[in-house]
Length: 95
Image 1 (cartoon, rainbow, N blue to C red):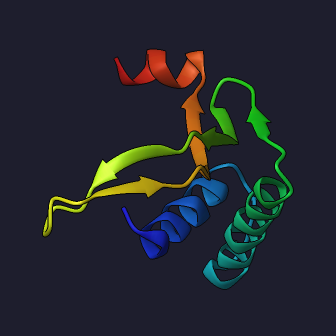
Image 2 (cartoon, one colour):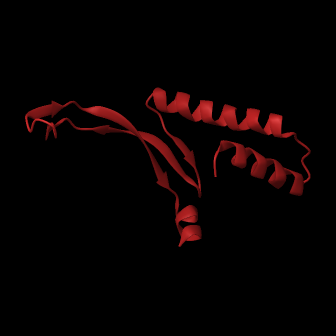
Image 3 (cartoon, helix red, strand yellow):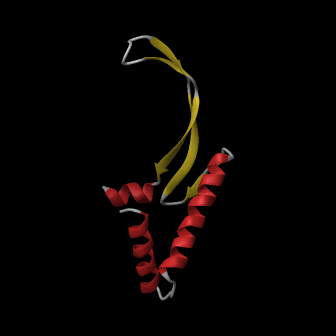
């Protein structure tokens, strides 16, 4: 499912729940949600959706690696990486 499919499915689900909203407005809501999550992660925070999961940022330690072309050892610097940890409700649903 890509973003366009998600917007269509979300619009249909909202119609089932009695909310009349266009796909264009639904796309705006999806974009706004993504922007809020991205801005919170950029600040180093996290977004918890109980039963669904947590979006957050982890610090990955620096390490030594190898350049596959030359075999020369290189230093890989530490980095901040985004993560998603599914909640119990989502894990149970997927089982």
